[in-house]
Amino acid sequence: MRALLQTYTALVTLLLLCAPAVAQVPATDKPLTPVSMRFGYIATGNDLMWVYGREKGFFKDEGIDLEFREGKGSSAAAQTVASGADDFGVDIDGGAFLGLVAKGLAATAVMAPVAKSPIVLLSPLDKPLKTPADLVGKQVAIAGGSGAAALLPVFLKKNGLDEGKVTLVNMQSSPLLSTLLTGRVDAVATNMVVQATLEAKGLKTYPIRYADFGLAMPGQYLMTSNAYLKDHKDIVTKIVRAMQKSMQATVDNPDAAADAFNRAYPTYDKATALAEAKIIMALFRSPSTEGKPLGTVSLEDAKAGAASLAEAGQIPADANISSAITNEFVK
Image (cartoon, rainbow, N blue to C red; front, side, top):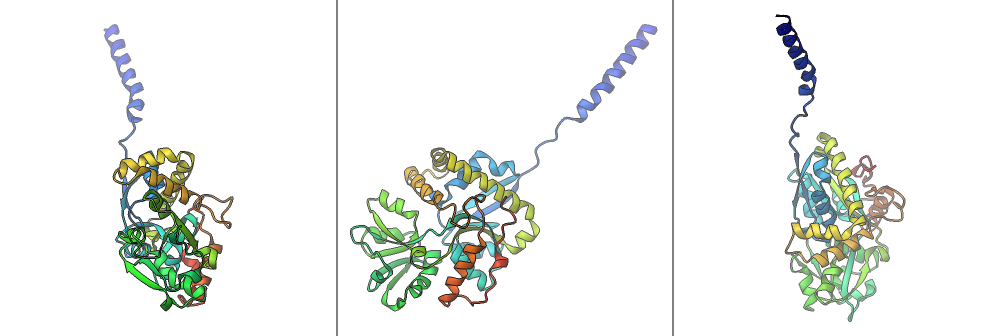
């Protein structure tokens, strides 16, 4: 009987000892939060780092299931985000964003992945347009809704040119580059990353950077609606953190990033995407953000951009743009 009792006691003790171990078994992973991100245009090397970051698991590590959606221009993308149709917009031209904010866009820039403005006028290298004055009497293709198109009248006015003396050919973004390739226009107003696309197709170009001729502007923003920002500050924090990791990972290993982009968008030429990404990486910081974390939003750059827009009569001189940008989430 004593032996039986000892056996029973030992068994109970064993079960009690095992109980904490059973209680410590980890719970199943929490479901990811779906988040949508609208590109300014179709996916290009401009977005290579986000695609790489998603593949690396930076967003998933933050509990985010990130969906990419291609766009049709900065202005259009910014407005779909502000309306709540998309959660975030990226590649949003800073100048176009400030112009929309001055007109009542209920949105906030929470990060500046591209600090320097990439907006340019490109012309064939064998028939270059080198100064704003060279545009007189020429045909310039613009894509409606793009930052380059929205700012071109400002650029012309800033340089004392009559917009009526430049023929603006408005079109969708898809055929924009082909018009320059085929010689149907003298220049295109666009993002400088497309220099890589044009060169891959055999056309070397000469760039007139808006910023080099008096049009100071911030680069490109990550933005969200004020309503989303109010209700989901935790998600904004996580998105910005994952994007900073994505930028640094791309700087550290651009070839691997290009491979990841190619897996996600196999019909897009990998070499071109890599060349575009390298152009963008050179614009990650502006003079006012040197030495600061990647993605820093510069109030100085934004104010300079707003001043240029006001000088050209595009926004009121007293437009309050400071409340539409924040560095709260960039660490």
